[in-house]
Image (cartoon, rainbow, N blue to C red):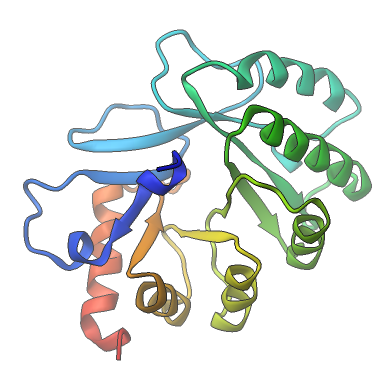
Length: 217
C-alpha cells in the first residue's frame, strides 16, 4: 500500500459507534501537537523538517513563491528524501494570492518532478486553478498520487478531478453533496484539520453527522 492510501478513512470507521477505539487519520495538518489515537501528516516548510518528526510533508506553498523559490526548492530537495518526509507539499496554485501566478506554475512543476524523483505522493493546494492543475496532471502523467486538500467544490468538479485519477480531502468547510458523492463511490474519505483549529475528532463528528442525516441517499 502506498503511503497516502493509509489515510483513507473507511465509511465504517466514520459511521461506526466505536469512537473510543478507532484510530483517527488526519491527512493534512499544521498542528504538530500530539493527539492520542491519531495518525497525522504534519505540514513543514522547506528548512523546517526536524530530526524528531515522524510523518511530515514538505513543500513550497504558492503563497510563499517569491524570487528565491529555487533556493527554497534546494532546501526541499535535501529534505524530501528523508524517511520522515512521506509527502511532497503542500504546494500548488492559487489565483487569489499575491504571488506571481506564472512563477507559481514554475515552482509547482519543479515540485511535481521532485515528487516523482523521490517516489512520494503530493498534497495540493488549489484555489481557482483546477483547470491548470488538471492540465499539468494530464501533461506530466505522474506515477505518484495527488491529493487536493481542503476541497470545497461542487460534485461536478469532484467528478472531473476523480476521473483524472486525483484524490480530494475534506476539512472543516465542504460541499455536503460532494462529500456524499465521494463517500458513495469510494466507500472512504480523506479527512484533515489543516489549520482550522478543530481536532480531527471534531472533523469526524461533523462528517458523521452529515452522512448520517440522509446525505448518502
